[in-house]
Image (cartoon, rainbow, N blue to C red; front, side, top):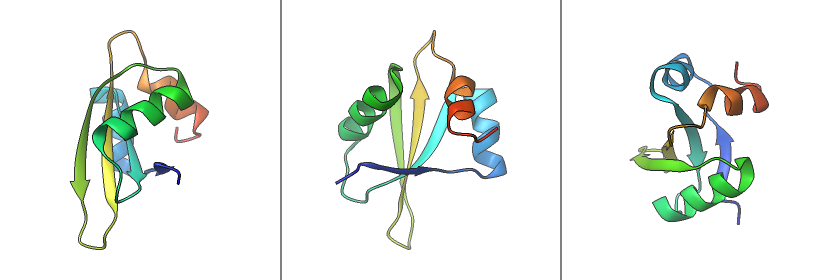
Length: 83
């Protein structure tokens, strides 16, 4: 089971990259914050400061992954071809 499904590429989520150093991902509905954090750190070699979760009525789950100081969400967004 893959915890991280795909990055969200809406205008609002792209603004969060530059303003808040946050990457938004759609994740597996059964995943926990710690699982999301570990998977993201393993995939991108970036330290995660915090993870916030939002559950949608259509049974999807959004994870707002804030990176620690010294790590740039813009660099990861470039790798993911979001910007």
